[in-house]
Image (cartoon, helix red, strand yellow):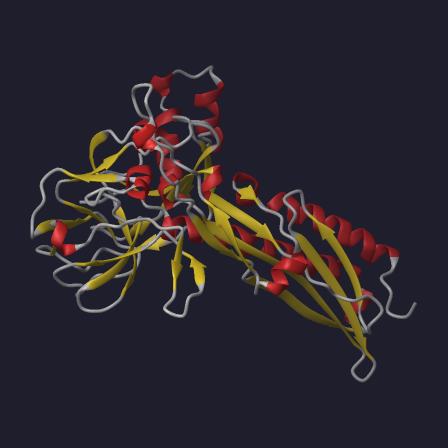
Length: 424
């Protein structure tokens, strides 16, 4: 067949797919949901994924007054990342097969990086648990703070991951490499020889050679919000909403619009707490004694912000707020102080429980024998890599392209978070 891949190219593609699979470090540490691609095309590539139920229990034997509805929360997940690496080679360049392999390796590296970056972005931008550390990364105590925040919220204790920027990771490794930690054991020697941390404080740790950064908050001091019942800054979860025309639609309960005194200087990504608004354990609803942390998703206008997670305080008691309460107001006030946590620009280090983040592989229906030759393969996580080749008789150039199609969603911002170092 004309333009068919020769044996060398098929072998090269097999090597390319293997290398692509190996490079998908982050995708192996998030959950994967495989979809029906016909259904996804018909729903504009959007599928609603359920969040975990949180049930209530009651004492006694007579439950007559305690039967009630359960609210199922879900979030929209979209296959929205379409990444491609195209290039061409001339008839003379094609004489050197090794160049084709090098270009393919580079394409594989870039596409794998795109997937890893997408996962890191949803973790860094939506992770709502915020750990602020005044000093540089120094060791076990830093990871233990992340563990404490997760444990206090009732996040499952397995499949936890911590991704650190290179400098912060190496700062943590320095604690393990000190001579006082005694050489002769594998932990200290690996830390000293390879700047390797490994498992620490219930987390598997990873070193990022790239990391998102967060700017210093520009909102300044003096910002407040009302936590009085009349201010309606609390949130009541609902599974669906009904339009005035009668249509019912799902509701994304990860976000809430709140009213504050001023949004001047506030930016997406900022982290903050509200005075006397404490986090609670999601299952027992016990007050943790620690201020609840929130992230700014967007600034709507001069006094309104969209945040994650919503403030589910159970101020107005309902089955849904009792189920999903995530914080408690110890002292209600018309001017509760807002305190920003990101006081110094810094790398964003992410931690998450595996089920919080989800990778959704997509697929291209590229026809064979339609003027271009196509090879495709699938990684262990279900991510498809497509390589296409087409010869142009007019220019004697051969076009190549490598493509991948996927989606990433942070299903539960309260099972993922960030740790910031060197904050004043």
